[in-house]
Image 1: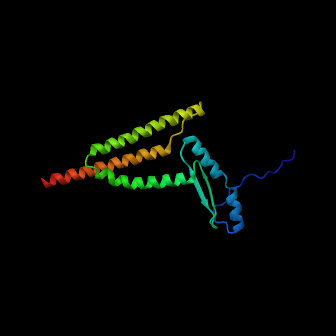
Image 2: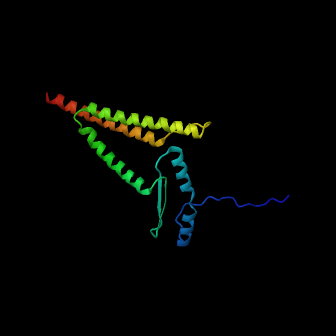
Image 3: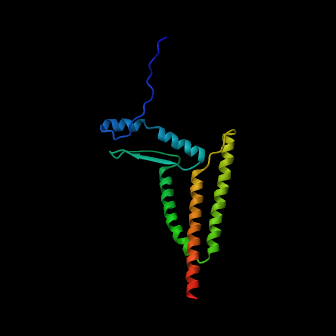
Length: 163
């Protein structure tokens, strides 16, 4: 019996490809990134966008919805994050802030319940993977609560010292 030699995939060393033609060929073969982005979008219903721009300036992208919607949403969320830091501390009524944050958590929980139900329907015998984006959002809310608590403690401390 002759053993046939077969060419398996080989690990490619991560370094800059010097040849411009090889750049283009390598980029055109990188479909796995888009495939993973599509899978992630399908599993989590997240809006996913991947943008690659070649050295010559030619864009390549995958998006689960329009790339414009994703970039607009990203920029809006970044702006909201910056604004939240100022809004939470500036509110005169801390209970109002907690009420708003509670509503955010409730909305996240409802969305999670729907995601789990959809996943169980699509994959009946599989374990539901955790939603890392939701966990990040909950951690951001916790961070906002900590900032509010610290600000409240500082304002109470300064009032005590004035009396």
